[in-house]
Length: 249
Image 1 (cartoon, rainbow, N blue to C red):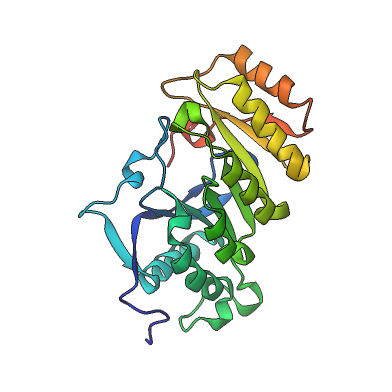
Image 2 (cartoon, rainbow, N blue to C red; image 1 turned 180 degrees about the horizontal axis):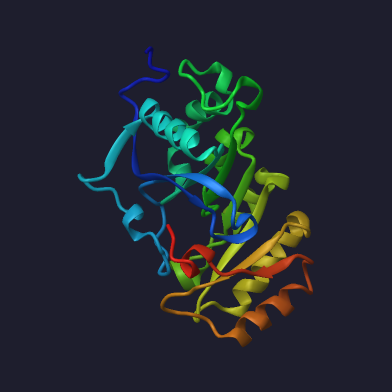
């Protein structure tokens, strides 16, 4: 078989697996997860710390190897929804810029696709920390849905207001925003987040995701954050991580 991509171009992959989306608006959706290793920031609530680091033990995979894993899982589970997650996938935007258009159009692949030609398109769901707007530009046309975190100083040591605002502008109607809420999250940070969303498009959904680990917020705090934010934008929800509740990957 003729390789689709240059074998020398490899990226660090923590794991590729099938499961169900456990967070936010698409919770319950069957997906094939491609979890990249490496991240450009450090959050104190990170629930995948293993994927944040790249070590000598981290698996390096080229595009053909990634594609082979995706096709195998797709055939087994009858699934064509792909979640790009991490870590931070946009660290590898140059790789994805080459990979995604070939993945999206199955009839262009020189490997047998898992579906018929009439069903050959894949749905791409990007999970990102929303801090790399210039990298997003490289692959925005290949993304169907963008799950964008707002990163707050109380969690990451600094705010990314300017980066988040630019990121939302580029994302357009493809994005929704998620904020992890811990006991250290400040109301002023939540108000600023809502202000940025309102500036771009007040109808962008905002999801508050309460931490279920250390730093679990009080219910009255979540209620206060939601009622305050609803004064600026109309679609604000509180949604825990379902995969943690059901104890699945």
